[in-house]
Image (cartoon, rainbow, N blue to C red; front, side, top):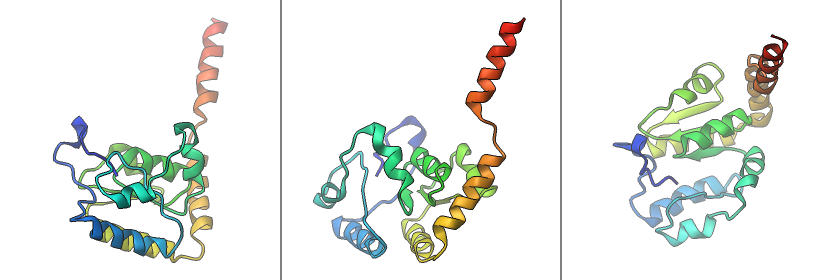
Length: 163
């Protein structure tokens, strides 16, 4: 959960749980499909502390790559999950330009403003038998259409040194 306290978060809203029982109910529905892990900038409730993960930042993408699904208020995490081939739901009333292509062209991510609609989408995705295969194919298509940035930069440097 995001604290939504950055400059770009002005007037942004995400999950907006009414109380701790509301959060527990949300988690309980997701837990039917596997372990729920919370990464949160706030820990106002015991439920958040119970599900919060404590890992080294360098290990976060490894964990994310094995997830069945990402659902959260973090747009950066949503895009990173999508690029790793993990179904991704960004819960916010705002949009992020870098998510547009992942949503519109590759259907790797979703931006959903209402938490209950986001949960419905998550539960629908989690019930799909071929979810991992489908997202692996979508990820593959996306990567095929992109350049290797390291290779590109290396080529530019090598070309400049020839001059």
